[in-house]
Length: 426
Image 1 (tube, rainbow, N blue to C red):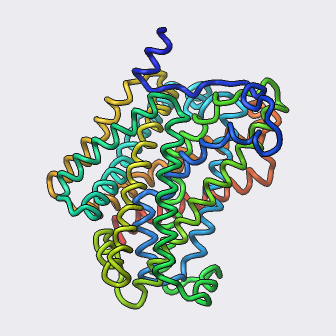
Image 2 (image 1 turned 135 degrees about the horizontal axis):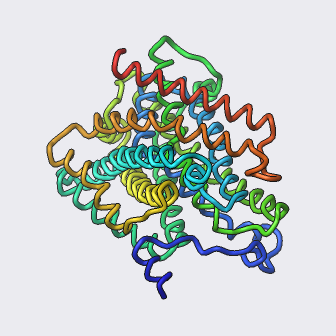
């Protein structure tokens, strides 16, 4: 009874199952079904309103030129999320818990503080994106749109209280809405085939294209998604021995590939649609301008689809931010607060910004700058821990995997430092 009451108060833990319980008597592809879900929650971080802003600007300014950057970004994200999921499966602990156990209390406390700052920055971007979606689609003033966003965010949170599986289903449905919206967008815009194919060839066009490519790459790996994915897999299905854990990870790899490929396709479509619609006409660096541009250049329905996609992405990614904050607080300092109180507290900064009349798109940019500070702090311990056999057992990284992961870490960290320099001094 006490366990159930705690679950209702804080948000349900994933129901732990053994490998045999999860798979049961299922054969073939049906064995995979119990493992589908965690990656879709993590993948939401890669189609958030921040991604909308960079993809739309890249497409409008350079056409399909930087399409290859979106693909490379997605490949990097797949490897990082696989490492996070693997850490949870191998250890039955999430990344924050391992940091707390392996490093000093002071380090763990510092990680918790910066983690809460990252969650606030994440919620700022997602909440404003969802409010913009309501504002653009339904023509609501921003303050009522923000209040409606708050109500919807709390309603989605009720699914988390019931357990992770209901939340996964809701998030997957909202991702599917984004897929449908942008699939229809690309049918409206009908991009030219030859320039589209040329976009897969790596090249730049002046220093500004390099800066924008850095923005796309730098916004790829979100720190909260790294911490969260290990939390979603660590006690979902627990392997009794190394061989079962390897089987669990193989199934989780399929989950990651499906979810992250969908996220990558969505980002590629965003850039493509922006390129075919705006390139050579105007450069779009504001989501409201993009909405009206789609309506004017293509059709009113195209603008509505863009707004619906933005709304769905904002609401789903905002809910994921709350879940990540819960996992991080529990892991770093072994404390929890009720998820509804956490959600209300995280909504206050964006609500205050919107009520004060601040520019929503500029607030999105600032939130991405803040998130840049947390990238290195999340990636470095992830690579260190997954490279140690004493922690990972048979799931320890291959040397090539470790080398690739460090390479990605260096690239992402350098790009974020470059973006920070450009933001403040460029």
